[in-house]
Length: 298
Ligand code: SF4
Ligand code: SF4
Image (cartoon, rainbow, N blue to C red):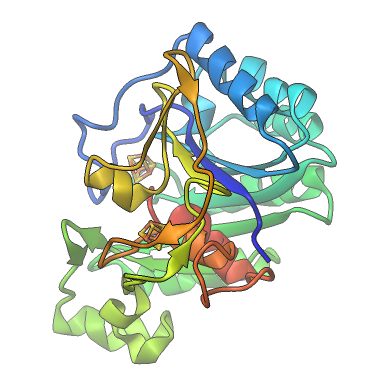
């Protein structure tokens, strides 16, 4: 069963500047105007049925209109489920407000731990408080990049996160066109984190669904901070799959599924959400859900 999903890059800017960020500083910029935000919300309100709106950035909470306009707009103007990828840098007061605003409507909070900017103690305490505020239904998962040279430290981090009752999901470090080539000392520790025998390439593989029927553009789409809509990330990367702009002519979803024309499908969301013929399921595990959100934007 397909689960309609929108991935919305709410704002490009991030308040962190992690050395391992897959987004280059020159691309990690920007924030939409109020007019664009309202246009995006109007478009989301026009979608029929209940979608999941997965918000990412940059850092969504660092965008000044996030809590004042984006989240209330989604909750009050649409029937959709709200999910977010955040570095959890927002003050506790803002996280509490987010939890209150989204009560009954929250899907997944994927919290990324970045030890270049916070401590594990401070992060876990925030995550634990947020976990209490959002109640038992929504998922809250912690993910962290397996930063080279930091794996021993990350084993302790994992223990701290799990001791607080939170799921911990490691992410192999991505570099342009693939995954980081870990040195021998790190490779020896990777099996303590990863399935697939600790092979980072297998863990982070980007499969090909070339020729399979795909509903991207029909029940799944990607929205940018500028209000552009694309059928999927791969299509966007190739300058294809443009569905329109929410303010300039509007967005038109595709009428029908189509055979995938690409040899790589690096984002897990379409597959996990039942968009690709013969792949994924309607009951993605918490781990899949975490990576669905966190996989593309670190
Ligand atoms: S890794 Fe995430 S938190 Fe760090 S700079 Fe990049 S987007 Fe921001
Ligand atoms: S299978 Fe993946 S890459 Fe191919 S069209 Fe669908 S979402 Fe895009």
